[in-house]
Image (cartoon, rainbow, N blue to C red; front, side, top):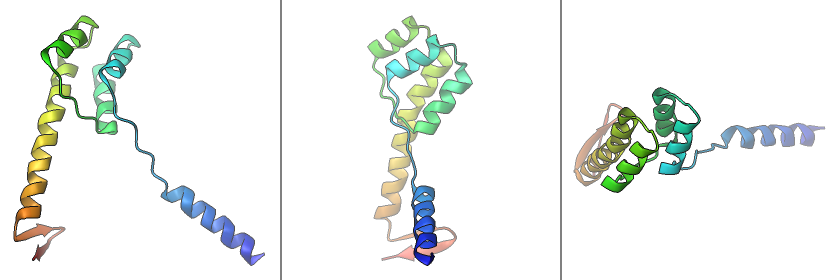
Length: 109
């Protein structure tokens, strides 16, 4: 009986610890969401949730516009690359710094 409880607990623990990350979105996904009638806010929320980064060429921007994707969504998609670059720069500055503060504590080498 104890082993049954332990196995049940272990199963619940592993299910609770499993995290699912959404796959990265593509330009095709953005076009599909637009043609499905999703609002700009919904599309932007899905891009945020997936943590996708878009490096859009001028041709890709033209394709998105031709497919009916709004300028607001396109501007947001372009910003994802800028935000990713800024976060990587911050991360490298922290890792290369002799001392840095995280969670209110100072860490150094």
